[in-house]
Image 1 (cartoon, one colour):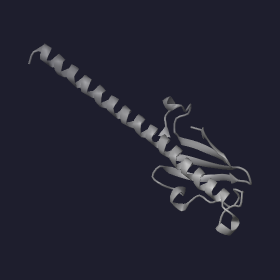
Image 2 (cartoon, rainbow, N blue to C red):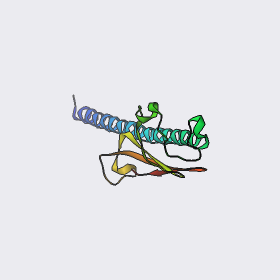
Image 3 (cartoon, rainbow, N blue to C red):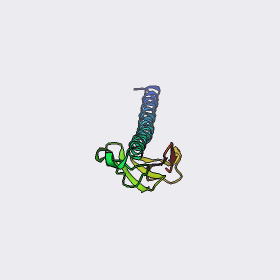
Image 4 (cartoon, rainbow, N blue to C red):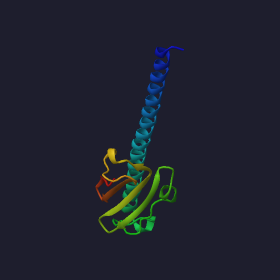
Length: 134
């Protein structure tokens, strides 16, 4: 083979390597964003269940206008998206946290690498507010 052919083969290998690296990066970014969206969705579902509990009377196994006593449904405590815990449940407010399965990279809105995706949702009788932690 001539020198031009060898150079073209080397150039082709370099282009393929960069394309593979770029594809892996896109896949990882998509997985992280998908996990973020799923964590938010699950937290909103938990907030909906807590609102239902709050509105039911105690005779109907509800809170009687109180979040105290609410428990996260067992199928949502730990699922494919992440792990969910109740930080606290008080009379007029509850706070839930979701920790994702994906690690939030430093370029994805998290200053420290190695931390998992984390969101919290603050629930009041008429409202639910999501806060991004990592």
